[in-house]
Length: 79
Image (cartoon, rainbow, N blue to C red; front, side, top):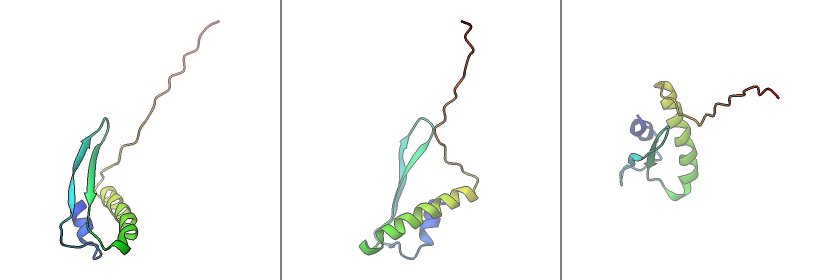
């Protein structure tokens, strides 16, 4: 799905190919590295647009991005 999303962007160069892989298995996530090749002057536009497009594609597939959570329990202490 990530590769398909990037292939839809004509600004991403076909050669050399895009690198997509798992870079870490973290506590509550699987971290990917996504490195397409683009023309230097288009880098930041493609960077931000790709992040948004990938997030929207993940949402469309029902894949959620985990976020850190903290549960706080308050106990009454008798004085």
